[in-house]
Length: 424
Image (cartoon, rainbow, N blue to C red; front, side, top):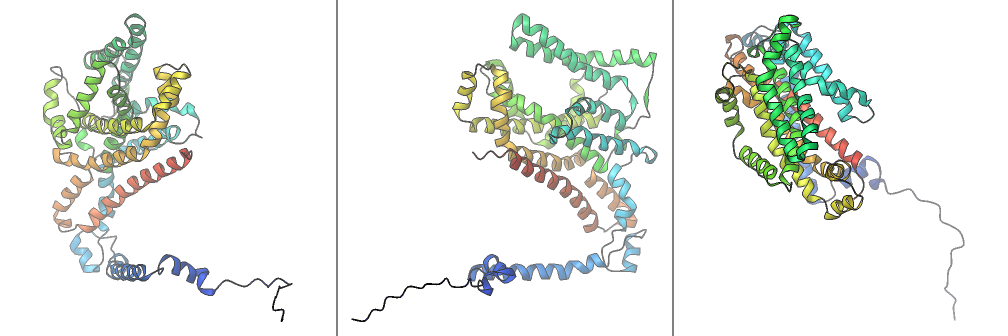
């Protein structure tokens, strides 16, 4: 019988991988040509990209940046006429704000970034939160100018509300303290700020040159309305979401009524209300700036949607988290601050950022009530005979700036999600 058993006694030398499985060819095969359907999609997509590049690139490469009119651009070359952006850049950025005072909105924007830093980045010193707290008053002073006393006494309304809450809470309970504190703040802002400010103005009139609201415009107006709505709608939305889940019937009914009413009304209706009707509900003789009225309405509108987004995060938490907080002996506010709300907000990050992005883009609706946001200014620019007929360059630039802001918010939310990812 023949013995055919064979056992190799030495290791084979390591072989190089097949050339088609590594390198650029391997990547292309795995990601672009991994099957007949993917191959067809890749070829069609490449054809579309090449076609668009062939059609659009000459438009960019032959663009004109220095001309005084659209007809002059057409005489120079057939490319894009970005000269309109070059000539009207300040108008698109600042509206009709006095050019000698451009430093004020620029400084307000820089301070906005500094004020947001301790909120958005945890490595920034928390002492800057003091600037964050007083920034609304600083922003108002820099943008609108005028005496320093009204913004100071508006901020004092929060102090009055806090003092009233602490006193009433000890005497009559939390519910009565909340209601009376809110009423005290409203009374202060409606009936005390103006006379008290007038007294201090008569003593020492300190401030900046006033700029009226009809001089505000461009992206400055969009940023003011958008950032104000974002900053204020978030805490108000948290309060409304907690109020909607409250066991106190009055608080729950008020929050539910507010949220459902605001969600059932189009934003344009609220803007018209701010423009035309809000003055009827104010004390006689009170003048209320149109931009401030719009900011209030936009904030209220975004707060209702924010409340529902956060309520979704609260509903997603398992009941065990609430029971764990009770087992640790935490009271309601401690449980919300230390256990419930951090997890609910983490779950709600995509919805929160989507609401912020939608709010920022909705600021363009203010052009309907006569405010000159970038879209309103673009119509005014196109109405000029020199630039009549220009469309793509103007709207493309506006879209690009909005995209930069919205994409930045989206990327920050992704960074935040990765940072807070705990694996469960």
